[in-house]
Image (cartoon, rainbow, N blue to C red; front, side, top):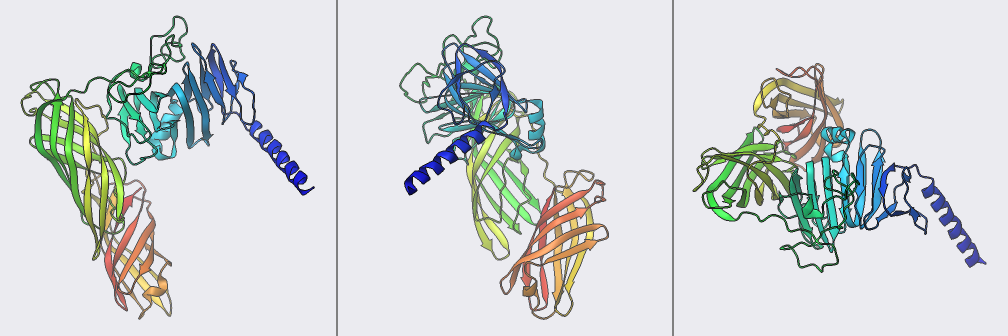
Length: 536
C-alpha cells in the first residue's frame, strides 16, 4: 500500500510539473518557417510541426530538416534563425526591462543570432548584466551587438560576426576569452580546445552557402539569403581531421606568416599615489604576405609585468605602451585585483600605430588585438606586491575602434578631510585626510580617489571593539562609511563604502559616488594608514 501511495504522489507531481511548464508564458513566436521544421515542447513526448505564428517557450527543441528553416523573434526583439539540418533548444530567457538573459543550445547545425536595438542599449549601459549567447557542447559564443553565425559539428564550433562584435570561449577554460569583431571568424576544436586567433573571413567559413532563389531570410549568408540548398559545409581542414558526415567547415584564410620586423618591447607604466603597475609586451613580431609587405598580423613572445599597491583593490584600467617607434594602448577588459593572491586578466590592445613601419616595411600601419594572462602576489608589509604574465597577439590594420583609456592621473578636485567618531566611554575617531579625486582631465568625471593619509584616535585599547562597526565620516554634504573589518594586534584593514559628493569635486560639478579600501597600523590609542578606491 505504501508503494502504491508513493507512485501516486510521483505521478501527481509529474502531472503538476508538466502543467506548470506548459502554462509558462511564451517568450517569443515563429515569424518565418520554410519546409519541414518540428518542435518538441517541454513535458511532451510527441513532436509537432511548426507553423507561422506559433508561440515559443523556454525548453522548446527545434529541428529543421533538409532545405528547411525557421525564424524566432523573441519578446525583446532579438532574433534567432535556424538553418537546415539544425537541432536547437531555447535554453534560457528572461527580460525584466533592465536586464536580458538569453541562451540558445545548439546541438548540431547552424544558427544566426541578431540582437535588437533595445538589447544593444542594455549592453552599452551594463554589459555583464545582459547576455545573448549560443552554447554548443564545446563553446560559448556571446553577442554584444548586431549579428553572429554559429555552427557546430563533430566537436568543432565555428563563429563568424557579420556586424558588431562579441566573445568566444570554451566553458572548460572560461578564463581564455577571445574577442571577435565584424568580418572575422574563429574556431574551437575538440572538448579541450580554445578559440583560434580570429582571422578575416565570411559566413561561408562556418557553413554559409548560396541561397536558394526566392527564399530570402532564413539560413542564408548573414540573413540576406534564404534556405541553403547544399546544407552545412563543416569540414575544418588544417584544424582537425574530423570524419566527414556531410557537415564540413571551409578552412579559414591562410594567416600570413612571413616575418616582416619586430620591436624589442612595447612597455608602459601606470602610477598613482597608492599603486604602480609595469607591463611589457616582449619581442613583438609582425608578419605579412612578404618580407617587405605591410604586416597583417602580430604576436608578442610574452607579456610580463609587476605591481605594487596599498589597499585591497586596484585603480588600474589601462596604460600607454611604446617601444621602437611603435605605440599602442592596453585597455583592461577584466580586473586585476591586486589585493588577491592570484587571478586572471584580459585586455584589448588598441590604437596600435607604427608611423615608420617595422623592419623591412617602411609603410605606416595600425594594429590591434587582445592580451590575457594571470597575476600572482602576496602581502609584503603594508603593500601587495606581485607579478603579471600572459600572451598577446592581433591583426593589422587595426579592427578595434574603442578610444584609448587615458590614465586617470589629473587632479579633478579634493576634499580636505572626511571625519567621524563613535562611542562615549569607549570611543574612537577616524579621519581621511586630503582626499584627492583623479580623472583624465581637470573637468572630467573622476575615476579614482586616494587619501593622503588616514589617522585616528581611540580610548585605550578600544579599537578592536569597533571591528565591523560602521563609522559615518563627513565633510559638509560629502559623506562615506568607514568600517574596520580586521585588527590583528598591530595592523588593521577597512572598507570605505557609500561615498557621496552630491555637488561634485573641483572642476567636475556632477554628483560623485565612490568606494574603496584602507589599511594601516595601530597602537593602543592611535591608528595610521592610507586609503584609495574607485569612483562609480
